[in-house]
Length: 287
Image 1 (cartoon, rainbow, N blue to C red):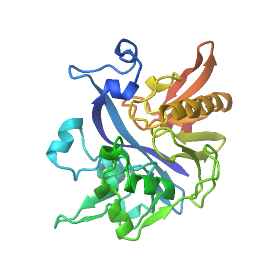
Image 2: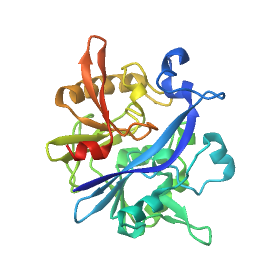
Image 3: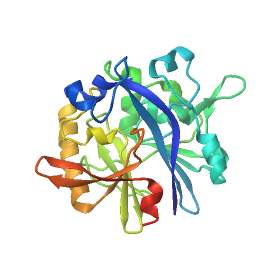
Image 4: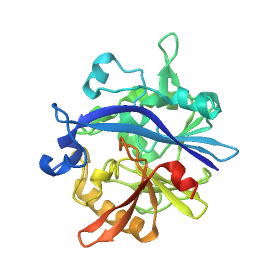
């Protein structure tokens, strides 16, 4: 198995929204804001070559939205995937599976692209696209608070093209459910309905793709929860359980949105679970 980090772009989001009730004087120590109160973010995917499959986890913002849309998020170095794949010896045609942790636009925007005629089509022509049925139904019928995050042009064409697949969801919340993708998934519901966190076993290491349960290392303290989460008290419970397990078992946490840090580990302290060490993915793969 080979693993590669892939940056799609860097973009910005409101720091207050990213940290909820936590005061700016505290959160800006780890995530400094610009003059517009925006903090720098990344869209970092994980590319997995299993030998018989090439799996991409999440697809960033994409590049098909109008200029006005991108103006809100100030993206830089948009859509670097093609360049990264070429450097690694792959193309989009080689990708067999795309896992979408959830269907918010910054996680699945690159799943669909426009052809030369302006028609929407799957961006990876030979891939199956994976979500789960409860989350799909949630995204197709969004609540008013979350509606702006679900842009149907990012995922409805996948169903119309016949490439959409559903991962089975366990009967009870936050537990692992095996699939034929050679990985497990943790399902969490605080940020959005049935967000999926892929769990990859690499030798004796467990790598968890954190998506929006832990966007950046600045979000490690338990109460540092995004204002975007639809069920913040559920996130609190899910974070508490997961972060303690990750510290106990030495999980390596792959960070999708941290602009500088790819991987971190956690430790127990008198103040609760806190950051232990940071790594690049290559560093831990070569240990």
